[in-house]
Length: 299
Image 1 (tube, helix red, strand yellow):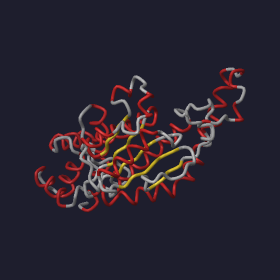
Image 2: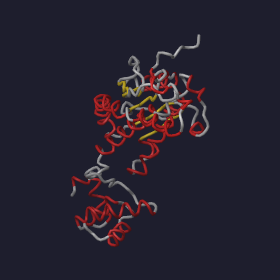
Image 3: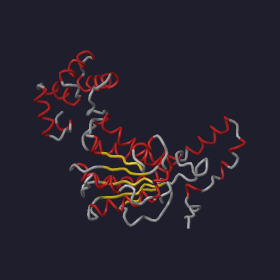
Image 4: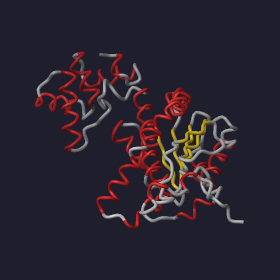
């Protein structure tokens, strides 16, 4: 029998938007924005569980464990997006935060929604990662029922003898699955367009993933004050941002900051340590290694 998903919150009709078909442009925009304003309240309600999850995975992540997102459709795309943005922002190796989408990378552009019904669909990808107990696996499913996601959490537990930390991130209240150590619910309510979870659910999911990954990056010493000091200047935009960060933390003029960045091979942290401690690039890099790259422990 085909499962009836009518009870799932993200599949229900929104009583405030029953007349979408009759709205003009201004009214459509107003209706969508009115619903979007409910998202911050949902994120606030989820704050305690998000905090507990991040606190649980932080020690293992700092020991070299990985953060692995997996999902289908919009949920999978959002996981891949968050994972792909971590390396250029924080200079973390690409393999430390990983996004897996049902159907593979081609599903990022061309929908392959049928793949989400296979609970074994992620078996090969997870085995190829050689999961360890230090890894954290986050299954993302707006409605909370996706077989691909539930099956993936089960596979992850099996491959790590139950020791890897797992979580299910959902936008609909559900019973915590047996293979999920944490259940994170972002209860945004029914969508403007019934079942279109790329809208409020997608926005809330992106906010949650931002919170998880950015907090881990902060706690791992990749941020000083509110500056992305692990930045490496590899293009014009990043070179400009890097120069401004160096100037802010050294009080050097812009031109001297750019020169210092060149001497530091484009590394913001290295440039700052070179100037603040009067060291060569090699010496600065060595000193940073002794403190696990935590700039505040040097300056």
